[in-house]
Length: 256
Image (cartoon, rainbow, N blue to C red; front, side, top):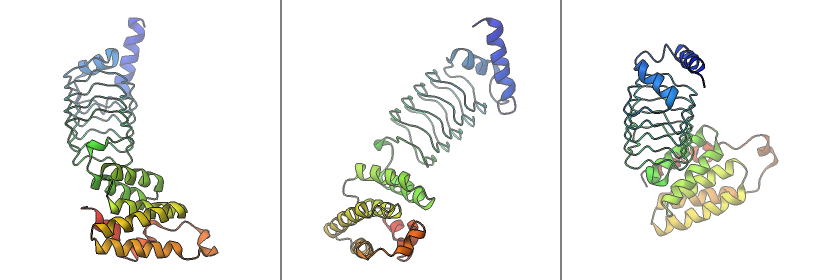
């Protein structure tokens, strides 16, 4: 690329994000776009929406408050970077290195985290709703469960099932997650899968001497064994249709 073309590209990028990038160091911003090498750079508040930063070296960089929504950071090195309050909605962080990064208050909704290195990263207070590929070791089973409940209540049953499965993978005897997955499956008319999950939950609640959970699982099993009336096919059964009648019982399993 000629110097003139490169300069034009950088200038166009800066103009596009001039409003958002006022707090960032302009020289560092130009360096990042031109070379993708910007260790310990000051990019706080920068506007980097949809930026192509694949493989970028941002070790120790300050990206606090920056907007990187839908940017491509796959394979990027963000080791020790400051990403507090950073907008990362829909960002591709596949195989990115985030070891020791500060993600306090960051927005990681709908991000792609497959094979991302999140060692030593505190995800408390991070919005991960809809994120794909969250490493099992990066969150507690109850967090996966909570994300599943939230996804189900928003009508995204398949995503809810994925979260419940991650909760189960992290804690194989998580009876509440089996029951929750069963209810989500019921909502998408997978009655066979729902029944299997309900029976597993019933068995686990029994062995764990959880009377409330056992009663709930048995009530759900009874519901599944009832004949399916034709009028039900007019619309999907709501995720809360069943649990609502029992006082949103799924939420009672959050601490487990």
